[in-house]
Image (cartoon, rainbow, N blue to C red; front, top):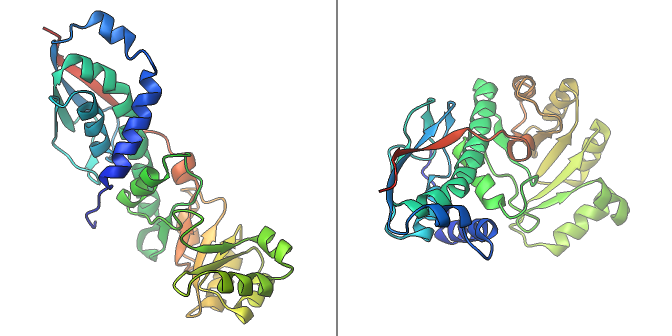
Length: 286
């Protein structure tokens, strides 16, 4: 897997927003009432189930933001597969900071690891067929960069990051433009020559019309396996093919076998279950 990381700016913004949401105007009133300000503690991050790790840098930054003296030592890294009950990181320092940051750190780590694990499982199911698993824009508002990163950690691709980096013409665009040809012509006139254009179709007749006009890629939406196979033959060497719609783990291998280049899976970001990870205190407060 190619080494990758999130920019510090993205990490800092996400952590600050999450802590601000949790702490509100009064802070952690439970911990502050119970735990002495100078108390120290040691804790371990331990997954309760197996999966692929993602989000360790965010977890570390949570505690660093609360107390610069907290030490976060990870024995594993993003992209590594771990078994249940394996210690993945150890944290030591100010007990208040550890307890206050616990849930925020676990939310990031569990959520992103869950996405990475789901992506890994979809990629594994594809087997040797070669189709790339890609994410969609069906992400949690405010967390897209993190969730797209988790998909990459799982072995998938990002597809579009947003509305700004590629053109995707859908049925409503075509309806308002008046025709497929007009929609594509307007898109080409409105964006730079380096911007890719993809068009969504849901029938082979629409695909044939698209091939007459031309585009960089086609989104084959909710097609049967037979239709996907026919679409791949029609598009071979002419545009990138992407299958979309109802992509379950049980179905993904059959879809990949049709020869499509990419398979978009919205469930990676909108439905992936969090990886169950806990924070276990090793030593109580002094």
